[in-house]
Image (cartoon, rainbow over all chains, first blue to last red):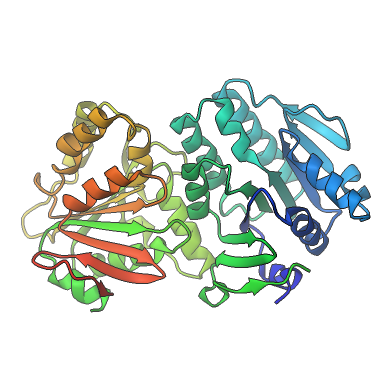
Length: 205
Length: 203
């Protein structure tokens, strides 16, 4: 089955976790996902410029990424200024503060744009900034959990499973409704609400 | 052995349910809650950081609903109130404080004669342990103060759900040693331990 076909099963409220290694086809997967869910209906929650290298790689492949320039982009720190930045949150600041800012922003945005798809790239990079604090790990995972079941949006997280804190990754795997794992050219459905889909290998297209 | 058969054979004690992070612990939780409610027993859920919400939502995505109104819940951290909330405790490594709070809240819930067994579900055990598991003193003190005590003070059955990916190996092994029954939820469900047996068996 093609990834784009698989994504037709996604319903509002679904949370999709894409796990990838450091050497991977994650830009291609990102591009296929945005193409399948509608490139004019996304919000980029870009943590520490994680989307920058994806965008660059897609450009180097000769693909049209103008949709990334147009899409609303909320930055979580990071230095780059590209795209349609609609807000910025300092992830170096006190976790209690930046997490509640993320929550407030998301809640308001989702209620004003029902049906939107939010895309979060490499949130795991925030954890080392705060000394791998287990309480931060729990709070970041709970922020995802609190939105589970919110039918105003679907969410896609991209996490590097080689560099992410293992506890954070495993908490997200428990919370998310669907987990896709990318390994080399293989993309496997690790978790799905429909048992029949688990173990499926997807073609990246 | 079917899961219901196992549950029927458990008169009291501690059951550990370990699950791989991408598997479906919510399904066994649903089966267990239904089993005990149908048997006239009295479940109580200790919900650490919104695990009950995560389980309930996963079940909803599969078209299954939980009889939440029938389940008394002690919230331990977290923000999504679900079920019949009878009290709240924070996630803490002050175990004496935790015990005192738990006893104060659970007192309202003490068994009256003629009632069924009291079954305590502890959801999110891994999240509770995670904050202090790298401190060997605190971890050992947790098992001494809290974990071994469950099931000795009026709980007939206590069932601990733990995400294997969030606790370290030492913590998992300690949980296993002090549990009378150990179930592993991976691709399928296996009984790893029961009184008098250590040969694992599919459930």
